[in-house]
Length: 301
Image (cartoon, rainbow, N blue to C red; front, side, top):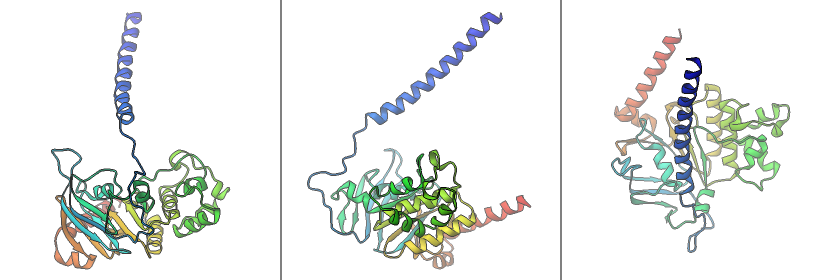
């Protein structure tokens, strides 16, 4: 019986591994079969300077034909303005960023940067003018210096240091035994979440972008790290168009304008004080988050 059941168990495990391999192969071949992005195409525009004026004109988009995420969205962000975009999960906050970066194309409407349709701008040029910091920063196995210089490969050590200081990362980096030459491991595993975010901010600043986007960049960090990142945001916002996609509302209260997205469109916009006085969608989001914090603190005690 023992000799009979052992091969049967091994055979069942083999089928499981085969099914996992087939599922993985489907994803690999789906990626391989995609058309490569063309960063520079003939006739594309590369203006000498981008001020950072962003316009969404009647933009609609859905990841699937049967589900629309954005519906006829119109939004103007002025050069040098700090705008926070908030809303419930799945409302379409990150979709706005994906469309601006041309990771996806809108199904209708158009997006303009400084009056130029982004479809007319060279894709490589457009992305070189936008700095993006994600909720989960992409870090590589290597030194801190190499990870920061990924934003601008030809940057000097002085430029790296200057970007790190602006991102409030320089102090903790030089406190490490090997400083900027410290190996951080795959995905920055040897660093805290807040430290990884500050390195990602330094990398984005090294590009000296006209438009800077923070997509949920403070949602998974502690209060001290959030304070340091908020200080860095206030410092780097000068002269740049800053878009903050916010889940933790404490990170967007100081924005010049807060845009609330609901049901695929703009439900409200204004400053924190104005939106709170309206008692609408933003007020509900704020109070729900405060209630969760209070409940969490009670559970801890």
